[in-house]
Length: 458
Ligand code: F0G
Image (cartoon, rainbow, N blue to C red; front, side):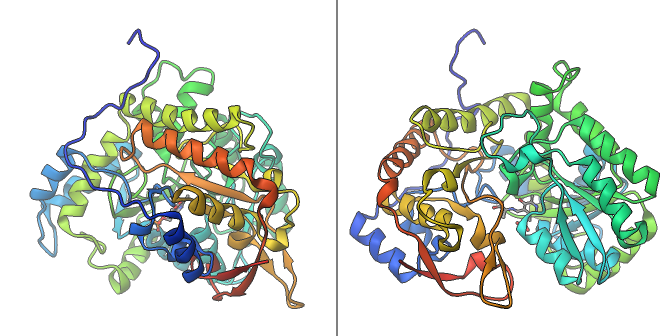
C-alpha cells in the first residue's frame, strides 16, 4: 500500500468493556496485593500488558473452528487437523498436544534430563529454567554479549554465543548436555530474534557433538518476520518458508500456542525421534491426557490449528511488529530508556538506567512496574532480580543481569489509541523517576517467586 500508516489488518467484531479504577482505588489495590501486580484483579487494570500469552483476540475463523471441535476422547478429527498443521509448518513428525508450553517443557526435561546435567539456551524463559532446575540440572544462559546490553543495537540480539556453547560442552562433557535449546524470539532477553545463520551455527556445534537441538518456538512467526526484515537473503521469502527453514535445523520443539498459536490456551511438544516421543507420550498420559488431546478440548485443538496459520500471514506480522515498534519509538523519543531495538511482542523498559538511585537489591524494575500501574492503570511485568535474582544462603542475592519491565502487547487486542495512552503513562512515570523508591521483599515461595512474592515500599 502506498500510505505510511500501517493499519490493523482486521476490524472489531465483538467488544469487551474496560474498567477505569481511579487513582485511590489503584493505590489501595497495590497495597492489598503487596506491590506485586500479579495479585491484581484484571478489572483493576486499565490496559493489561502483563503478557501476550493467551490474552489475544481470536479470529472469526478460529471461533468457527471451535464450533467444529470434535470432543472424542481418542482419535478426534480435531487432533488430526492439529497434528497435520503442526507437521506441515514444522516438518516435525511426532506431534504431542499439551495444555500449554510449560507442560511440554516438563515432559521433555523429565524424559531427557538428569540431576547434574547442564542445559544451554540463549536465555531460558522462567518456566523453562524452573523445569530444568526441577530435574536437578543447571539451566545455563548463553546469549551473545550484546543480548545483555539494553542499549546495544544489534539485529539479532537473541543469538546464542556459539563459542560459549562450545566451551560449555567442552567443560561439562557431552554426556551431561542432554539437549541444547534456542528460544525464538528470546523473551527474557527483550523479545529479540535469533538469525538463521546463528541457528545454523548452533546446529553445527550440536551435530559435531551428537547433541539434539530443540527450539522453544513460542514466537516462531515473529522471529521469522525479523529474519525476513533483517537477514540478508530472506527479504523475498515468505514467513512460512522461513519458519520451515528454522524448524528444519532442529530435532524438536516446545511450543506455547498462547503466543504464535493465536489461541487462549494450548501448546505442543514435537520431535522427529519416535522412541523419545513414545517416552514423552507415556508421561503425557499421566498428567495431561490421552495423546490425541493432551489436556485440551477438541475445540482448543481447532483454534490452535487455525491460529498457527494466521500468525504466519504477512499482513498480520507487518502490523504486529510495527505496532510494538511504534510504542517503542514513542517512548524512546521522549528519552525513556528501553531495550533497543524493540522486540517483537513487547517493549522492555530499562529500570537500571531509569532508576540508577535504586540498587538491584531494592528491585528497581518491580518498583517501576508498580509506578506504571499507579500512574495509569497499566500493568506490565518485572523481568529482573525478582524473577531471576539468586538468593544465597547468607540472605543476600545475586542480582539478575538486567532490570527490565516488560510491556507485552496481546495479539489483535488493543488499538493505536490504547497504545498512545500507554506511551503517555510511561513518559509521565519517567518524568517522576527521581521520586520513585525501592521495595523490600516481605515473602516469597520456593519456585517462580515473581508470581506471588510480596513487597513493601522502602
Ligand atoms: N517459553 C517462552 C519463551 C515463553 O515466553 C513462555 C511463556 C513459555 C515458554 C511457557 O509457556 O505459558 O504456555 O506455559 N511466556 C508467557 C509470558 C507466560 O508472559 O511471556 P506457557
